[in-house]
Image 1 (cartoon, rainbow, N blue to C red):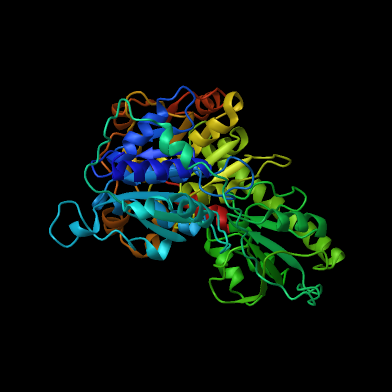
Image 2 (cartoon, rainbow, N blue to C red):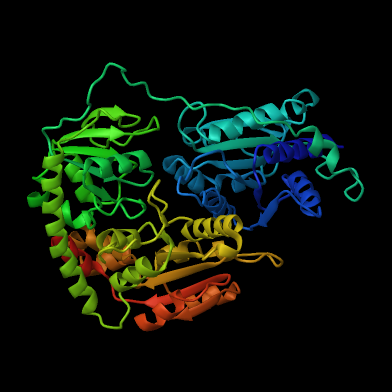
Amino acid sequence: MFPSQALAQGIIDSLIAGGVRDFVYCPGSRNAPFAYALARLEAQAKSPIRVHVRLDERSAAFFALGLNLDASASQRRGPARACVITTSGSAVAELYPAIVEAHYSCVPLLAISADRPVDLHGVGASQTMTQQGLFSPHVVGEWNFSTAREELGSIPDRICRALAASAGAPSGTPGPVHINCEFRDPLVPEDFQTESVCEAHEGNRRSAVSVYPAQFLRDPLSENILDPARASVVIAGQGAEETVLEWAARSRVPVFAEPMVTGVPEDVRIPFQQTLLGHEEVTGRFEQIIVTGRPTLSRPVQAVCASGKRVVVVASYGEWPDLHGSASCVVPALHDNDCVDEARQLLLLETLRERVKEVRAGIEEMIASYGDTPSALGVMDMVWQLCPRVFLGASNPVRIADLIAYRHENASGPTQVWSNRGLAGIDGNTSTALGWASACARLEGADYSGVTAVMGDLTFLHDASGLGLPRGEEFPPLRVIVLDDSGGSIFESLEHGRTASAGVYERYFGVSQRADIPALAKSYGVKTRTISSLAKLREILASQVEGLEILHLPISRPTKDIAHLRSL
């Protein structure tokens, strides 16, 4: 076996031994040894892997990120289960957007890049650049492999360490890792047809090493870290600790949760956080805030965390959320002796529930004013009622969900919600949703009910290449609802909408596109429908989704609606 093929085969086998099953492969020449290794395994009658071939490296990386979103309630626990493989040169740089998203979302992700050997660097070789350290500020680990004979035997141990690092062991913080592979010619196997598949594969199968993550140390002599004399609330962002939500239910502490936080007990869940936390009459009723997860969605939340109230952060990771440096205490968990005054909490809960009723009535009135005409609010309201698993575009859709989610009393809402909030960007949203849908379909089999993604027109167009699929592969069950309001309306609800003139706004912020979204989607072979009524949308959402389907909904810009709801 030629050295480059031995290196590729050894890495793939070690990844499989560590639990990796999905390989997102981007065609190239320098990374071809991986292609031959994957092709052999994929051809087996009972193949241990699934290979997804994608042309666009940026979209491929986001697809791999989506594959790593565990379909269980405890997302992002455990090592990466999917990787993305690219050739050398600028293809590697295309992975960066997904890597930084994975870094700030604490999602495991394996980025594997092919590279030229060291003697081809600095001599003018084609498609050659410095790849080691390229992602260094945003990966939890980086490993470089060469074809040197003495290195091939160490592949299993080094891959084991890479997988452990992706899971956050022992640092405590999961995230992306970079594996860079220096392949030397020849890049093809000695005999692709007859070379043994099992020679390297079986030799590298070994038990993974158990590595346990580090924990923050809490003084065992410390008493209650909460101040019982202060009325308290929990503010929960994406990645919220389930134990904190359970503690809140036991302690009767109200929970303001972003829409990505599901499973909040109904008797303490306080919806409409963007609206309620923007008013002093509400925020003046509590003096202590317990923060869990990464609440970065709305400015009212950030303002109340910086308002001088006592802040206790509960975080498992080293980079805990404290934008304003105002935290009084940071702990990995709340203990049984961390308690609040139950009578004080019950009074606060009752007061907040009365305020919720008023906001709920205002939302109902606004949604009803549109009748059967689709609006951003009406569509999101319907999605929240009918769809069990929801992906939210990181622009207006996630904020609209935050404004109207759980407006129906005693409604459970989706069981899982995800949005790329690590960097809160629109990059790669379609590809992430496709990856997540694919992972869920694999894990749930016949019981899988599909993912529903909601995003704006610019978000969809930004990742249009993510729709590319080679012949022979099938799209997972995913509905993408495109709320087409002709441009970037989110900036209208920010200071730019108040400052820029209409002409300047449309030119520099709205940037409405000429693209025909239905025609674009159809050109990729995707089933596409333009929807003009909520009744039709309800009918479609109530039906089983098969493959990828784009629902194009032209709507008016929701800027005034958003402003009104925030003022309720």
